[in-house]
Amino acid sequence: WVTLMNYTERFQVVESPYSPTPVSTHTLTDIFRDESIELLLENDRYNVSNDVWERCLLDPVKTFLKKPGKSLRRDFVELGWKVAWLLSQQVTPQSHTSRRRYDKNLNIHPPQCPEELISLVEFLHSGSLVIDDIEDQSITRRGQPCLHLQVGLAPALNVGNWLYFVSGHMIDRLECDALTRVRLYAQLNRVMLRCHQGQAIDVSYKVTQLERGEIFNLTELSTRLKTGVLVGFATQLGALYFNLSEKMCETLYHFGEQIGLGLQMYDDLSGFMNESRWNKGCEDISRQRLTWVWSWLSRHSEVSDQDFSIIMSSLTQLSVRGDKAVNELISTEWWRADAEELRDQCLPYLISAESEIRSTIKGALDTLRHKLGNGEAHRIAVQAVIRLQNSYL
Image (cartoon, rainbow, N blue to C red; front, side, top):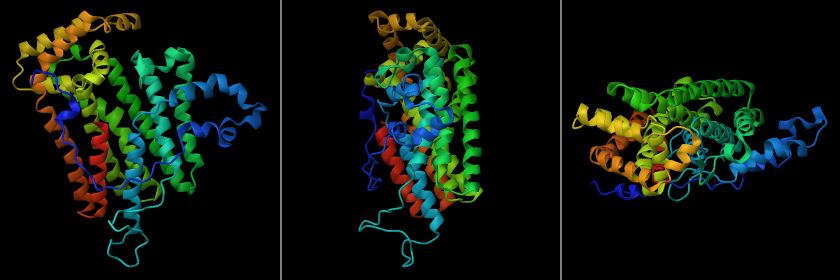
């Protein structure tokens, strides 16, 4: 076990019969090219052309968006959309009066999810990544230098904040009634508040400065607020759009929040164990970040207080402050060798991490089944989560 294994080889890939909605050719950058940009920038009011904004806003945004991520949040929005639409029909698959369309495999074909709902979450997430990279003093994002290293700190900070408001603008572009728009805005505001609370924890606490018994609760809280809340929002959007009951909106939100918690566990563990993502693990180590790796170690019965103290001491010694020091040190052979030694020291205690992650995701699906029953909506959720989990790995 001490021998480092490729993370993905440790998890069985499960085939799913789920047929995803074909990916739209529409991209986030298209919004900054079509006629809607005129409305967003209010050029008529200020008597200016787009050229004025290209350098200070649009070019930096396009620079960041040209290297897309895994689009997992798009998948979560579409999953929530399918489940919510199915629940809004209030009919059974066998009903001859059903408004649903099925192919020969009984795969559901709901109306296409509005791109505005997808863009709402994607822009919110993109803005948060720009801001997070600044606050975390990160070096790379998606294989390229972080935006603040490409365009400067002040322009990147402004762009990140601007994207938050572009996210809200997507609600204005939706074709929906006034009540739906109000509900969407209210939930978006709640998400913004909670995500910033989670980030406050992330940037204010170092794992080495906490008591052993504090690490798990703070890690879970930070994860729920930074990751879980946004995923919950994504899975809830369809229910809000179709004006489902408050109870059902909460059900889909809590489902997404718990799935988001599980996927963040995957992300932290893979950054520590997967060689192709080791740069992410090194960055977490250098910043002494609250990650699930240290959370699992803090609760492991076989890790004595003395052993845990030694691990935290090694982590402290590896930690460096300042961009220049991080850039220079984590790329040096001796630093990475010491980091790998720390990783090897921790590996035997992370064997149970996989089962805990799967238990977290299974718990979310079981709770959803309890709320929705053993019907088609739950089946779609299970199959989609399998696919999302596989793509995440």
